[in-house]
Image (cartoon, rainbow, N blue to C red; front, side, top):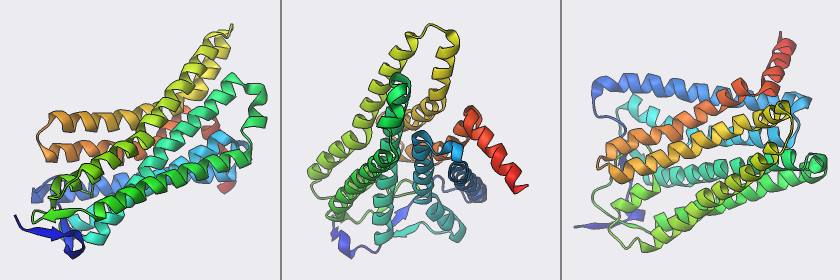
Length: 309
């Protein structure tokens, strides 16, 4: 087969979710609506946290940054998909594809690390309530966010550099609506063993380590809650963790579902449909989970609305 160096490739083809022309207007309307709801919902969370002094706490600092990461996460993929549907095109430039890979990994890893930071915050708040103001100081929260951001940036740039060294065959069709590292590696004709090692270590940083932190944190949290004597105290403690646990289950549950579906399914197009869950649905639902399940957010929304009115 003819080989092409990636630097000489002008574009890839994103096959999207369906080739049916009759479905394209429906897909455009559906994903445009989901994108707008996601952006507006997460911007509302950021606005409420910024405007309400009652929410100037470590928990909501991490939440507002999680909302910002979710906006970046969905903006990396969906707008290009909408443009391709509208223009009846499937192409994405070489530079655009690598940019998608870089930002997708950046915001995805940042999402995961922020969820771990939020679990640590709940651990300190419930297991060490008297020391909470001393431990979770503002400058520590900012430092934790910056560390999470730079780890995510490093992870994304290492993947970017590895993908940029790949040699591809003439088949440049990506069976998805965005450029995914694993699918780019599948298209490569050169040796990808180094890339697989990078993916393994990247998955450890963005997946295994945050999950381990979350599991350990909630093991300590649950152990501490069960030692409480009053049922009211137990309910209040569990309620402060409910929204975060829901988001954690949604984020990692959909990601694991996509991984398992790709492992048992032989249809790349079905894998693309499954990937919609964690790339689009999860960022869209996060603001609803926090606004509907969190009493502080609902109270702050009413206060901000009354000021505007």
